[in-house]
Amino acid sequence: MSMLRWIIGLPCLFLLVLFALSNPMPVPLTLWPFDIRIEVPLSLAMLCAMAAAFLLGALLVWINTFPVRRRARRAEQAVRQMEAEAETYQTYQR
Image (cartoon, rainbow, N blue to C red; front, top):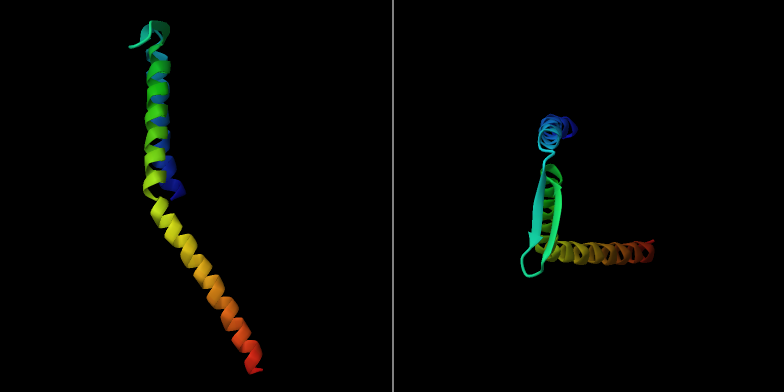
């Protein structure tokens, strides 16, 4: 798994650095309902947009896995309870 991460990560990092170095020109960013306008380098604007998309995707995955994590916690509690009961039965048999 670690090797696969390097095989995929290094070319992506290389492309990201190339993109940032080749797009230093400023672009205006505006927020529609407000009259806010700022100029940032294109590479920074794209990196911020990608970071926001990544965080939104991570949030959606976290929300969608909530029922699975809840079932896993309940199953762990049930296992602990059964192990405690089994231990008490073993002490009675001795």
